Structures are given as C-alpha cells and as structure tokens.
Length: 77
Image (tube, rainbow, N blue to C red; front, side, top):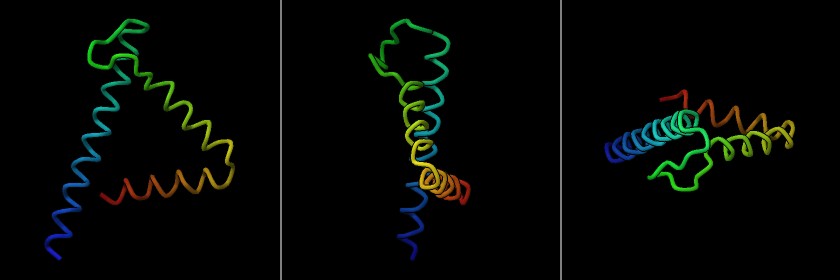
C-alpha cells in the first residue's frame, strides 16, 4: 500500500507541475501577444484550451459529466 501512496504522490506532483506550466504559458501568451516566445515556439495554448472547451460544449451532457469528473479528481488532492 505504501508503494501506491508514493505513486499517487508523484502523480499529484506531476499534475500540479503541469497546471503550473500551463498557467505560465497562458500568462506569457497574454503578455507577449503575437510575439515569438523562444521556448514555446509555435505553441498556441489559449487556442488549444478554447478548442477543448468547445469540444466539451458540443458534447452536451457527456461533456458536462466529463468536466465534472475531471474537476472532482483534481479537487480530491
């Protein structure tokens, strides 16, 4: 059981790192509006997030359930 707790802690730390990097990317895109950011190359983070939200919204109830599941998993930490 101790191994599972360690794996869960690592997964949680990686998820937190991912969310932090995502937030940093969004802030950089807003600040440098249209300019090239050296370490992000041609990544369009805001556009990708917008597309994901549109995909969830076109799925109707299934999209809402998916968002609820993702939210509840994230809030359990």
